[in-house]
Length: 419
Image (cartoon, rainbow, N blue to C red; front, side, top):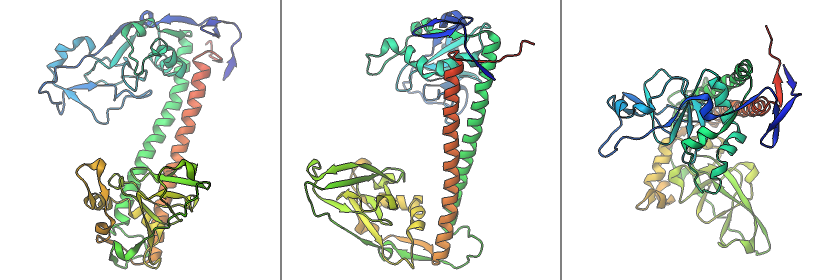
């Protein structure tokens, strides 16, 4: 249960509970220091040894060591001032992720580089509370306040030492940390489930789309076609008018689908050669195809316009292939590999896709349109489940953000038992 704050005092330009303290980082810490990097000349990371934590590992509220780096054990003597202890708070002090922080909660021997600062809380504070307080957007904003004129600010150890942290009584720190940890646990569980579902979807795609596994009731062999047997190239060029409004779209990399670039008048567009796209077209970016920039056009982009930098394909015979199946099939790694091979150029960022080469490639798909439909439905269901879980995660994050704003600033107080 929560209650509104009654008696207050001033902290910056806001009011805080009068029984809360304001302490500098150095007043609540046993140690504030940053790491350093070894001499990298001729150096290679090890397969094991001392875990080396960099700013890339420090995420918003958690440590990501999914791709760990290790130093030889001997380096711990050279970098002994920055050896991590369980419970240390890690803060990124340089780079794009500046201000991000988390708690080091591992028993593994570890060290940090010069982009990360250690704040080691003393016994007068609850480390989880301090970590949550530092994650507040307002805290990061204040921490970076003196660096606001820099294009890429750097924090110094002095900035961390002098930073003012709000501290409620110890019992309230514990209670606040416990409430917020409940949301963290829910977020972590949901994210773990998302990861599992995404692996399951990937397995389904690789097996159902290639015929390695079959859905119940389907036994007919897959049939091989050349791409040219399945698609026609379509060029519905726009009759240009400087006063017409054109809805322009592009394709994201990594099979991210289409997105709206904007609505522009003809006079605002420099390249005067546009194509009209229709629902179900297979759209390919000639310059980004090796990065997975192709997609089936959904209904919301029907009659939108793309530049002549796109190839537009239309299914020849819907008794052989349907767009809902191809939407998934074209995401298979082998198709992306073909696209790379069938692009011309000396550098991956300058390759140009050649459909005349690609159309000779052979693909093997279900002969039955019913099976194509069933496979597409299974994959849509798997994807929908993942999207619902992602929405749930975002909702939990927003709820946690709201709680942090209320509890860590004293706007709302937890009713803590006096027993």
